[in-house]
Length: 215
Image (cartoon, rainbow, N blue to C red; front, side):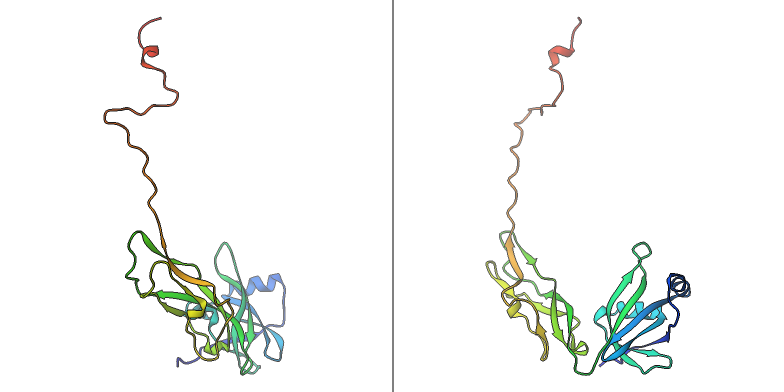
């Protein structure tokens, strides 16, 4: 198991737009930590540290430790974050403490693996569900649910009920929901070709006899 990431933070006493702008100019992000049976705490953390977590394979599902100076270290997970639409950088984050044994609703991507042998007659793979909500302890959340589609054939589908997940993970989606299937795409009928030597009619062009000769 990979070593848990520790992010250092500082308690934040002052608030307001001016203070938030100053923090962001210093490369820091205002955060609020709540949940887990404790009181809410306002703090600041380095943008580079939080951004590095989001770039991992687990992304927003990553459980990490937040070390706030003067406070006990807590295991947290991203609950929400605000992104500047112009600069594309995080400007605020809500972090949720994780109590031991607590389960949370999380979103996990679905990855298709393999290549079906039955892809003739214009068959293509259609993935109807690309991510799914699950209920589990955050530390046990899978980075992705991998689905083998090598045995999939035309006229058949893979449903949520076919997904395999680890013990203690509950899928929060209807079992009959389609995940992937093979659909047949028919070529559009070609427009009739012009007869050999024929010229296409140009709308608005005057007949030849009206454009030649004198008055």
